[in-house]
Every structure is written in C-alpha cells, then in structure tokens.
Image 1 (tube, rainbow, N blue to C red):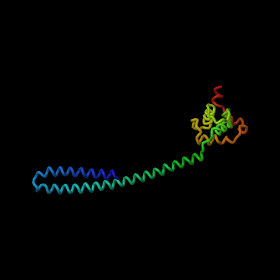
Image 2 (image 1 turned 180 degrees about the vertical axis):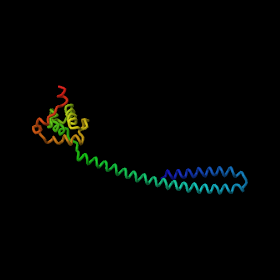
Image 3 (image 1 turned 60 degrees about the vertical axis):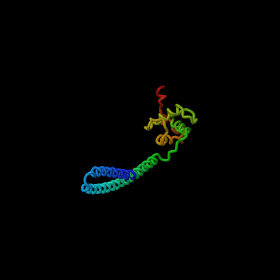
Length: 173
C-alpha cells in the first residue's frame, strides 16, 4: 500500500515538474498566453490526482485479493499437512532394538539385538523394504515401520519357515 502511494506521488510530482517546465517555456510569451497554460496545468494536475487515486484504489484491491489468496493457500497447506499427519498415523520412531527385534522375528536379521544399526541391520532393512514393495532407502519411516512393527510382538518361532526370506547375502553364497 505504501509503495502504491509512493508511486502515485512520484508520478504526480513528475507531471507537475513537467508542467512547470512547460509553464516556464511559455512564460516567455505574452501574459495572455500564460493564462491558458496555467488552466491546462491545473486540469492536468487534477487528472493526475484522479489517476493516482484510482491507482491507489486498484492497488489496495489487488493487495486485498492477494491477502485472501494467501490466506486460502495457507489453509490449503495446513489441510495438506494435517492429511499427511493423519496418513502417517501416530508414528513414533522405534528404537534400534525394536527395529532389530522385528527384523529378527521376520527372519531377516541373524545378529544380536544390541541397538547398533550396523551393516547387517541395514541390509536387513533394505531386504525387508524390497520384499514388501516399499521405497528402498534403508530408513525406517512411517510406512516401513507400519509393516515391520507388526512383527515386533511375534516371536521367531511363530513366524516359521513361511516368514523366512532369502537375503541378498544368502543369494550371493
């Protein structure tokens, strides 16, 4: 809003100065010629003021429209964030031990549940993601944990051979 008023004032000032130059050049003529020039300058000044006021009004209208659009976009963004949070559910990052235990229960991790995400644990995560058609990034996010976490309460004896899978290390051997 300040910018539009400043621009309007700047335009008005420029036109007034231009009119003054025109007045000065014509003032060398007879005084009879000066009077119409002053009237023309007054008319021009009034027109410029009206135009500037219209520009300010139009700019204010555009600013209000922009504010409304931004508020609407903010509401849309907020809705999208809420929807994403609802999709993710109440995801709380599992501990390293929980990850290892679930991988062990599903038959992909053979090491000890020590809380260290070493190369064997990372490979087991990748294998699990591959076998479950998840994004294979080696990270335990909400989607991976939604599937893997269900094996946390299952003991390895309950999973049996039907849950055992072949790892990439076993394929290489």
